[in-house]
Length: 517
View 1 (cartoon, one colour):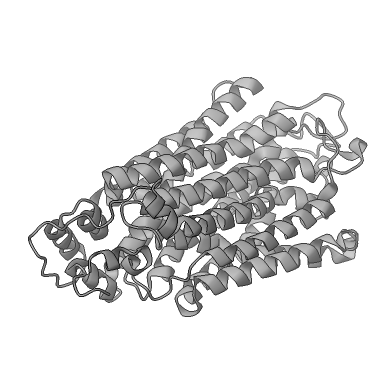
View 2 (cartoon, helix red, strand yellow; view 1 turned 45 degrees about the horizontal axis):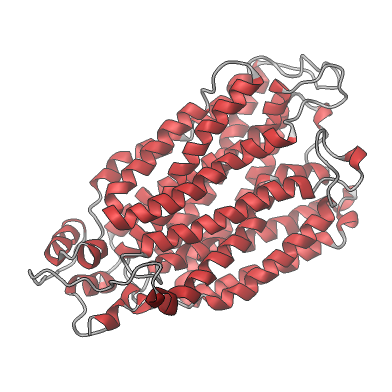
């Protein structure tokens, strides 16, 4: 560190881990808990929406969402998230992290509630209003990515910074778990209260009218965890790094940090000079951070193709291998319960542990190694699932398919899903940090959109007569898994463009320390 390094930043880098660090993890983490709940809970109720609004009299199978509707319902929130990441990332650097942080949360709360209040019972009206509010819900969620990561990285000390940022992101695991558990609980109550026969026994009677309330309740409840932390978000001070390095007010930065953390900061009352003057589109940025930005965007992009195609369509994979019974053998509410149970088991056994392994090890073995290990094993397990796919689909072997599938989730989360979130918050200069994180995250969401939409079509059987209603023939689940394996291998190669940040201060990584020499 340069001798002239601002005292306030030195104090933050060397501060002992204290209560406020954990408070910040909870305040930022509850946003991510809500993000994951809201983004992934839709996959629990899409089959139910198909049964309620797209029932065809006399059909052998329950109604399903037409391909374009299914793509819109699953993907519109991801499109909103991509837009929100770029917009709020830029705004976080322009106005400050704190000013924008409350806006994103309020947007999430309002749109969570409204997405469950989609008007009328006409399929077109319900799906249109659902998609409208889920786009804006995604827009708010998108803002949470760059802001939460940047705020946590700027508060943390350099020794435990990776673990703190990863802990905020790890709340996603609990959000996915909570979505599954809440849907299971609600479906169990509805199923016990409103008895219904299986579809093959009574196609109309299998979907009770009250089922229309079930999906709405599951979506609306996502507003509550976000609402609980709204007050605390507004009370958070601006981060010292933003105030000192971007707003150039060192004494204010010292005063803000002294209020919330036990650090002894003697600040120079003089206003600091701006440290980084080059812009995002300048040659200097390209020389210093161009390769870094390529590394963070490409790895996040490739990871999310694989991660979201698995996550959003895991119910289809479970059905394909027989873990969820055929739709016709269940009533509408029982099907929600079975889908939610499968998602909850995967979250409990692989997703949540994977996130917390990262939290525990990221400051011990570093970001680069975790990301390489994660991509490597995701590649291995994808190919292990794909090549003997016909063997896995035999009834006696299904449990091994699920175990391998769970391991790919484990290594996604103890691997690139966490590190691609952490690193962009550490390697760019303070005045561009939120913007660059937002750009990296947006490329990730572009990958998620490709994964979500592409897998929907790709995974269809090669025999068109066996494809879902309205879908063209695809390349089948086996070939889709091979494609995802190749995507993971490319992610491993792109990881070489990402620098190791373990144990270094933000100013060392961004080059701001040298500039103050």
